[in-house]
Image (cartoon, rainbow, N blue to C red; front, side, top):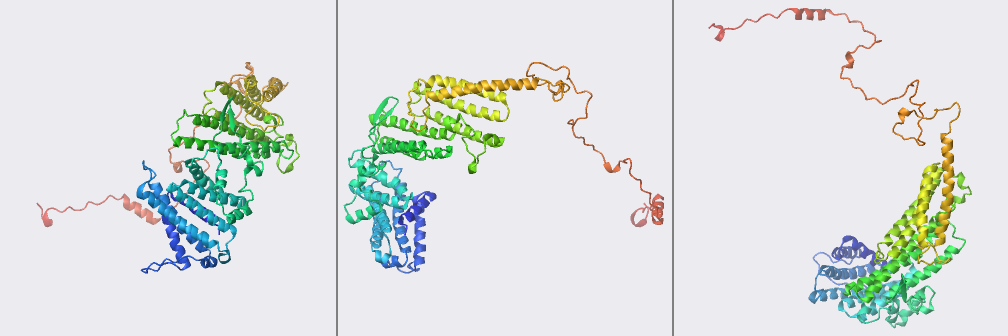
Length: 619
């Protein structure tokens, strides 16, 4: 019957309208159309009769389930529209408005509980256990919203805890994100706020609070455990990834030799997930199955998601303290700010690590073409590949290096980083290291195009950058083991390897440029000045070797060449110009009519007799 999907899709559609009031109006239209479709609509000018939905109706047509859901949602939308209307009030929602909101939520809860009671009759409604649990969780979430407005925090936490456990169990079975969206808003924030109002410690995780406040109903517990056997158990009895919330979650976090306590359970839980994802990533990267750079880069997805969750949890904790009026000088706020900088730094570091493994082995220093294998398992060597394909692969690496450089720059904007001069120097050294790699890649593209001079200039620039980076990275505070996945940490051995390689490439390209200059300036006998332009055509160019060939001033004897000219336009009647070679037509003999006409025209016109005075009388 998809109770939850029907509700979530309707609320998502309401966000497109902009407010709950428009959503409420649309729900009224849908209810009217559905009642007409089911044949229970009130006729015009007839007295309204409240016809209750029965289990037999649902068994015959599941549209009656949608009718109850739409009616419940309309009451909920009415309450939300009033909250939005009075959200800007300085004194909050009080008096009759608050009572009206509670009344609408109570009405919505009545319809939801009615649906749950009807679906419990499986034999008549043909509903399964999932449908019944979805209806119960929906009713519990509405009851929690009503108790939240009543400020009955214990009842609110119990109702939302029931909804959370059911939605968590359903998410393990259906593998959809609908239930996770409901948990993120409004279930989990309401549980956290209600627990705070009840005086519970902030170190308690939301799953622990939900398990403690779950109803002691054996039938409900058995139904939920059929979907997820571990949903009501302690975290110590579950898998290694799941039990980070109870015992393995870190209690402190260290940032630049400063250690702070983690008082928020959500942050500690998320950090435990990052730790587990890091261990999993190390195992995946060390296996022989992950050889493609793109596959190795995709292995970072889990740890990037977990790192983003830590950043979001830290930001949420800071926002809660700000809403409570806690100042920046408070110890809790200081700890959270340090935590936020640390977790943001780690998240950007994992993002850089993904790009580093995608450019190839050793940050793309060696095997710069073979690190991008051809499609369909082609066994051709890199020499057989066309130039365009080689340049395309090098261009992809340059894009990855640009992303790394942007990430390093974004670290400097984190709170507290600008005041740390030592960290600024380390970031500058790492920036120079990746700049050297970018220059090396661009130099290789010029080498592919047989342009050794530009390649030599870029290699010289890369060597300068790497030399300055190597001197600073040897004093870095970063520590990295051989088994840890690549991230922002650049070890002195890595920078030294790059410097050694750049120095060897620099010497090789110097030799190539010298050979190129010797072969280009040496002239062959009998072929002097064959391919050289005369001096008069290259006056704006300075000679590379400083010598001017005075024997090749102009081209003599001159050759027929195309020169640019201005187009000419003649203001003349071309039809009246007699061109040579055109045949002259014979004149046509004149006819008698034409002769007569000419004679008539030649005769002078006779003067007409002028009339004098009135009626011919002279004056």
